[in-house]
Length: 109
Image (cartoon, rainbow, N blue to C red; front, top):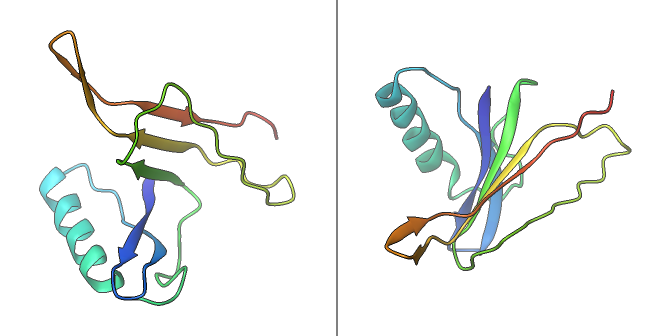
């Protein structure tokens, strides 16, 4: 599956939703991610990269706070059934570094 995520345009303070093609070779994937991020960060459109594959999933970061649960409700006339991964701000607890992760999935057809 291909990750879909947002990039932040500092100039107009807006986000754009893009995706990067998955590669099992981490270095190839990282290179593709960096090229996509560089190309689309300055976009003023919400979805500047065309052709989002059906086999994709959403991933987002909210690094300014931590959480014990997180819920996003996407209304798309009941058609939105992709998984959503949300990660928060890491924190220290008893000498361990922890990162909150929420995984939201839908099982209806």
